[in-house]
Length: 314
Image 1 (cartoon, rainbow, N blue to C red):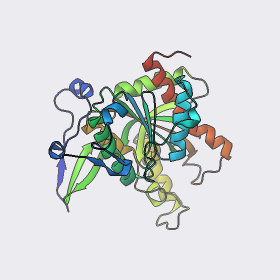
Image 2 (cartoon, rainbow, N blue to C red):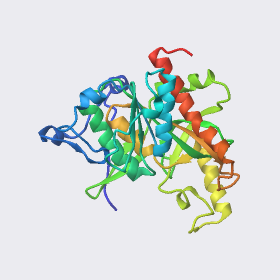
Image 3 (cartoon, rainbow, N blue to C red):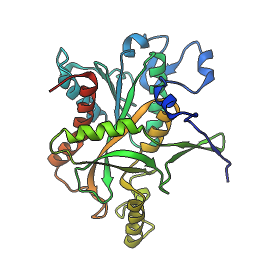
C-alpha cells in the first residue's frame, strides 16, 4: 500500500487563510522564463495576462462548453455591459479542450467531465490568476447532480465535498505516494449564497454534503450501466448511508475543486442542481425544457451573488 501523507493547508488561523491572495504552491514556476498554459492556448510570453485578466473577481466553471458560453451571455445581460452578448468570443478558441469567456469581472470556463479533466483546468486556471496578479477572487463550480433524498430541481450548496467513504478529503497520488488534502469550502460564501437563495423566487435550495465519485455509473451505484456488480438492495443501502452522513447530492468534480482552491488560498463554492432523486431511480427522465430550466438555477443564484457583491440592484 502506498504511504499516505496528510497536508495541512490551513496554517494556524482560518482568517489568515481566507485573506490570502491567489497563490501557486510550486517554487519551480519562478525559475521559468515562460509558462505555457497549454490547454488554454495562452502563455506568459505571448499574452499580457495582467491586462487580459487582472480585473477578474469571479470565476465560474462548469462541465459543458455550451453551458458556460450561455452563462457568460447571461452575465453580460445581468451586468448591463455594452455590446452584443452574442459577440463574446472564446479566449481558448485555439484549442478544443476548454472554453473560456470573460464578461466584465466574471470569467466563465468549461472544465469537462470528471476529476482528471477539471484538475488539469484548475492547475492552469490558478496559474493564470497568479500570473495576472488577481486578488480577492471567488470561484464557483456550477453543475448538475443526482439528488440523495431531494426532489429534482433542488439547488445544493455544498457544505463539504466528500469521497466515496463520506470523508471530506481528496486523495492525489504523487510519485507513488498518496497525498490527502482537505475539501472544506468557505463557510462565509456558503452562508452568503444561502441568503441569496432566500431573496429569489422558485429556487428551492439546501446546504448539504456533496459526494464526488470517479464515474457516472457503477461509482454512483447506478443499475443501468454496461457493468453492474451489485444488487438494488445494496445500492439503496449505500444511498441510505450516504444520506445519513449528510450527503444530499452526487457528482464527479467537487473534491479536487475544493482541495485545490483551499491549498491556493481561493474562496470557493460548489452549487449544483439535482436532476433526479436517486432513491427513485437512475435515469434522467424529465423533459428537455424542464432540464434546461433546472440547469439555469445555479446560474441564477450565483448571478445574484455576484450582482450583490458588485452593488448592482435589480
